[in-house]
Amino acid sequence: MGANNQWVMGRGLGQVDSVPSVMNEAGDKMATNRGDAATPSRAKGSRGKGPFTKVKFGSAAVPIYRAASGERVRFTISYHRDGKRLRQTFADLAAAKKEALFVAQRIQAGMQHVTDLKPHERDSFKAAEAMLEKSGIPLVAAVEDYLRARELAGTESLAAMAEEYGRHFRKVVRKSSAADVLKEMLKQREQDGASKAYLQLLKTTLNRFTEKFPGDLVNVEAHQIDAWLRSLKVALCTRNSMLRCIKIFLSFARSRNYLPEDRNTAAQNLKIAKVVTDDKDIFKPEQMAKLLHHAPPDLIPILAIGAFSGIRMAELNRINWSAVDLDRRIIELRAGQAKTGSRRVIPITDNLAAWLEPLERKGRVVPSVKAHHRAVAAHAAALKIEWPRNVLRHSFISYRIAIVKSADQVALEAGNSPSIIFKNYRELTTEQEAEKWFGILPQEGQSESRAIGSKKKRRGR
Image 1 (cartoon, one colour):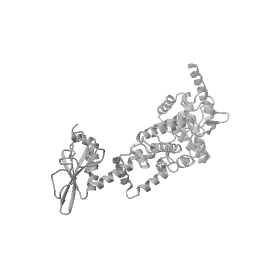
Image 2 (spheres, helix red, strand yellow):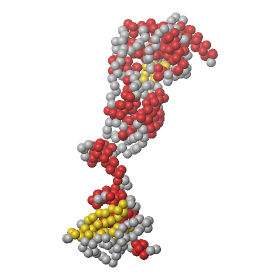
Image 3 (cartoon, one colour):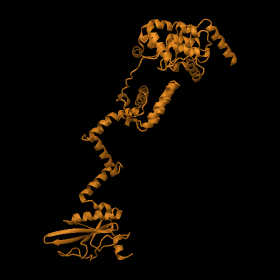
């Protein structure tokens, strides 16, 4: 090892000396002038005779030159970066030594680019790094986050906003994706005995919701939900139904501590849209009589129970004949069978009892849901009778309120709200027409033919 290199490696870190310029171990040039190390100072105005002193860190050394003019003395450090020679001048030796030590440290660490900073800028940089050291957050990430927060906050205090946020969200201790929260809710609803139809409605709507908003539910805002629902371009009733499902979902999330318990959910701030309803389509008594008097035996349950009890078709599809009690004159819907999730008792009118009594009442009321409902629609079409959606239920409610004169009673029987009954079904028909409706009975001999048909069907099984 050469004499110069022996001198460099034999010194400790951060030393100041007046030895000649050397090369570091990697071959990078640390100083550009050579001179007599035995001379600790130069005469006034002396130039080009080597450095006044040197500052070293590890194998890196930065020379300091002294120049005087009259009473003024200046100290200059010199070093190379990216193939260029750079110089910085200071009014006193202490400042020059401090800067030279910093340059030597950066050269040793391979971070020469930081030497571009001015001393006060570098002090700020080092102070910022020190503050972030414990958090482990990179300086660039911290600055980006601050600028984004500053942009969102406007003129508001960031500290005040953070404090307010903490008051609202400190109780949210559970984090999970929207999809995982939905799985948890569906499992709970299934365990609680929710119907398959209700679970399917929740899945259909909320799977779409969680695909649109897959992240943390805390970040979903009301205006985002509203904009998404409107973008689907579905019917107003469908949009309202989807919003109801979302309200249920977010309320569940709040109850499980995924959302703040002391605040409304984003969906709760959205209102159900008002739907302007036209008059309900209902059958005339003559049309219903024609449908029943020409119906095959297996379609009688759907037509008669639907027309004279007001049960929803989805509810009718779920019940067995054991729910139909002709002795007590009631149809009993259990909570899991009713759309509302509440047990409901529907009275059996005299004419409905007359239609049901001859039938074989075992098993499910509607054995094959799709096949039988298609057969009912085809039966109406064959008789040239239009089949509007929910026409049997609409007809029952309209004629029933004309007879009993009580929206509360009809609402209880039909599983609806009194306000809806009063608003949508009142005065759609007359009491005289209602008496005809509930006076539709089997034709003479029709009950025998229905019973014979039921027996033939049993023998063919």
